[in-house]
Length: 521
Image (tube, rainbow, N blue to C red; front, side, top):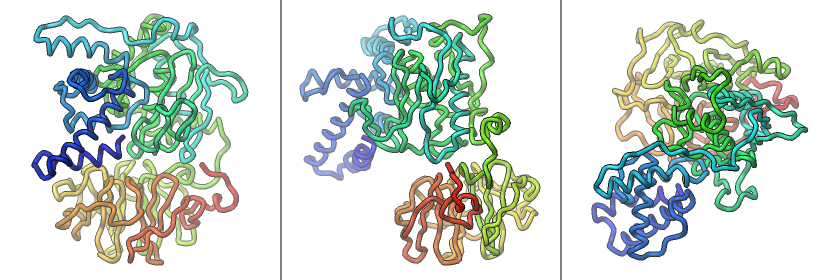
């Protein structure tokens, strides 16, 4: 749905300003309505496909109101752009059938013109669809290929612990060969759950789960899953949400609930809302002793690639080579001597031109005042200065000394917040920032965007969105990185000419063990 509706949405300004002829405008409106009806039917707001009739228009408007209430949108009953964009957002593939019941009552009361006293609706599984035991086993059947298995297992363990902290439930990981109550599996496309549950790649429905006692949660293997702070789709939040379904919880219309149909973001607030806590306790009771364990804020769960390293070392033998070769990195750049700098968390590695890599070193040891988890880095090949970017701030260093004395607020010059990657582009002798589907060419000094920018990433033919690094190479090519893959771009043609896995195919990245038969990812 997302791709088709996105194209149609781009025609809305023309439609609203009269730039489309009446016949074409009517076709666009009809197509948008058909897509919205299919969405509302899939997620339980319409029981069947609605034919065009006056009665069906009233049912369609009522369904839109219910969806708007559940989605925290202004309740109008009109298929406006904000409602369409909400439908396009990545979400859980489980229908909202039970979660919209209180919304139906409230919307009906609002539009009937009288007050209604709303009581909390119990939004958990019907009789016969809960677990009749409090000790449940689980198994992680497989995991995304580009994520390290120990980090994924740590995220799964923490997601189950999140629910056991606030209920009488206890979970344990079943042996690989034994039975398990709950199974977590990553699939591609149609996986025998019915065509309505088939995965469609990045975006759309990211995962779905089944109420007890089938005990299964399925995740789209083609999604850009991440266990780090920002890039990609946060797997931990989706895991915790779908596990809630396997316990018998339906979707919540409460603000900031983990069980809302659209996955919440990690932030400073507690990951579980009181609506989530009360729902699971209504099913399984309070924790032993009758009290609720202290809830942890979401910001503590932002980087599972560095989660509980002591426990992970006990589980698996030490893997040769630098850590970034087995997961990902925050930023990467190269200096005028062709030394590579790879950044991850509060550490960095130097890689010589021949591929020899240093031990990890603290960022503060080399660049005092630089925060961990920088988001982009580039070295100017003109003067040799290092530029670092994070959030709305940027730093400039000449050797180990800051040039600006303190970090600058870059957004005043039109630079994007939270850039994906930075690159010094030799043909222009300029720094370039990449963010999503756009890129920004910076004036000399790194604090002002040149006129007529940003532009679309389509100028860089074949380069994907949300890259995590970019490097100029001595042969005149540009290498772009995302997750475990790279794209080689001819800088004269601005066209990608090759792609592959950087850890195993680019020996100058310092992953020497990967080129001698070692297994990665």
